[in-house]
Length: 199
Length: 199
Image 1 (cartoon, rainbow over the protein chains, first blue to last red):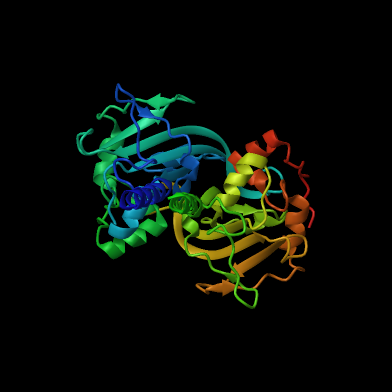
Image 2: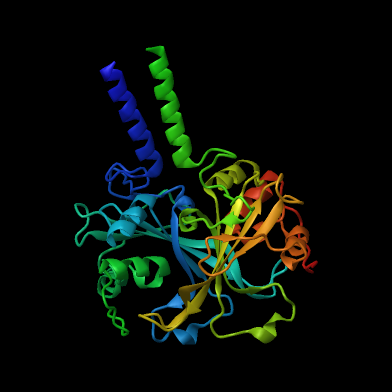
C-alpha cells in the first residue's frame, strides 16, 4: 500500500510539474540542443508567455533615415517556468529561453483604416541562458527560415555586447517589457540603463 | 488495490487537466461571474495565450485626422483551453474569453531611438462567449481602472454590431491574428470580410 501511494503521489507531482513547467533542467519548455550543440527550434513558442511587442524599434541613432511606412513588429516570448521564476525573484533562472519573432506590419486591410496590425513572419531568433554551456551564460541564435535548428551566433556579433551592456536585467531588455520592468523594480534587480547605448 | 489505482489515475488526470486547462465548463481559465452577473477580473491574463498586438489601429474611415505621435498598443489574449480548441477546429468553444489590453506607446527611452515600445496600461476589456448567458452568445466588458469586476456593456454599443458583422470567425477579429487566420483558412471557418465596415 505504501509503495503504491508513494508512486501515485510521485505521478501526480510529475504530472503537475510537467504540465506547469515547474521543473528546472528537466522543464519541458526549456532549450533543447542537438548532439552537435545546435538549438532545436521550439515548436510551440506561441504558447509561451508573451512579454511585449514593439513596432519598428531601433537602437541605432542613425535609424530615422531608415523609417518606412510599414516597419516590422517584434514579439518577445519567454518559457513559462522562467517567467514564473522571474515573478518570484526578478531574475532569470538557468535554462531561460526567449524567442524574438519578427512579423511584417500592415495598415490597410479588412476594416482597418489606420495604424498597424501583424502579418507574415519575417524571422525568428532566440536567446538562451545556460551557464555551463555558454561563456557569459547567454547565447543568441537565428533560425534560417523554417530550419529545425540553429547554431549559436558568433560571440563577436553586436547582440552580445549590446545586451551585456544595455540589458536592464542580466543580459535582457527588461526595460522594454512593461510588466516585468515593474517586477524587477520591486525586487531591486533593475539595473540603471544609460540613455547612450554602449555597443 | 483497484480502488487505489483508480483514484491515483483520476488524480493524475485531474492534475493534468487542471494544469493544462483542458476542461470545458470547468476550465480553470474560463470566465467567472459574480452572483449578480458581473465578470470577475482575470488576475493572470498575461499568462494566457497572446494572439497579436497592433499599434494605433482604427476602423474609423475618418481616423487619419486623429493620428498622434504615440498611439496606443492593443494586445489580445485568449484563454488557453479555447486556444487549443481553435487549433483543432477553427472555432471558438463555449466559455471562450478574450482580454484586450490597451497600453501607452513610447519611442524615446533607454537605448531606443525609433519606433515604439509598450508602456503603462491604459485600459482592459474582455469579450466572452457564453451561449446560455448572453443573447447572440457573446458579450463585451470594460474594466474600470483596477475594478475587480465589470458589468456587460449594453447591447446597443457599437462593439456588438461591429464584431457580429465584421468578425472573420464567429464575432471575433481573427483576420488580425496572423497565426489563427491561417488555422481558420485551413479549417474552412474563415468568413470573407468586407473591406467596408458594417456598423
